[in-house]
Image (cartoon, rainbow, N blue to C red; front, top):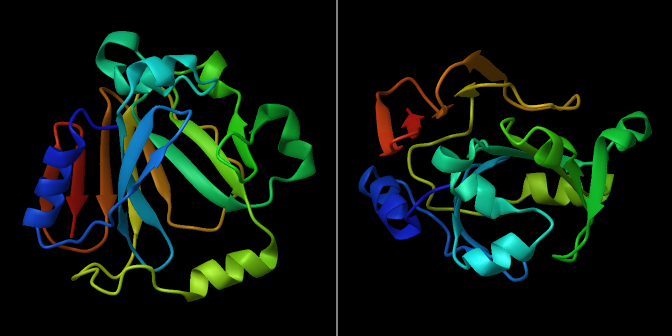
Length: 193
């Protein structure tokens, strides 16, 4: 979550990266911009309509106001199929159209990062993975690691992707795409490489 989407986008673009135009999430009260790599993306999310966000079951207004609410400002979205044995830990959100499984920590332990799974069939996963969504992605070749600091680690199901390393402390997120220096995007977000 970012306080000012335009300012965060300017910081990313000043570092030589390109963000997509983003979209508005009607009924959720949010707007986004994404930094897209070949198989993952970093989504900068902003509460554009606080009233709409408060009315949504997702309650992303709490995450947007993380410094006051204590909710984590971070989230992890995965693509694929949620294993049947993990369904009790999630609830189904369909307000945006696709089937999205949201971890119950969103309501029960909001200090943990939001975890959700965009349900996609194997063919759709292959199609999305094979296509480059951002041909002007700059020097980033892909996400290598995510370093998360916060009061509690995310409740992640098994996934195939870069490692997520969690440590205890004040909220901070570093996404690692290379060996270069860390570039500060917001007070709690840096991109390394």
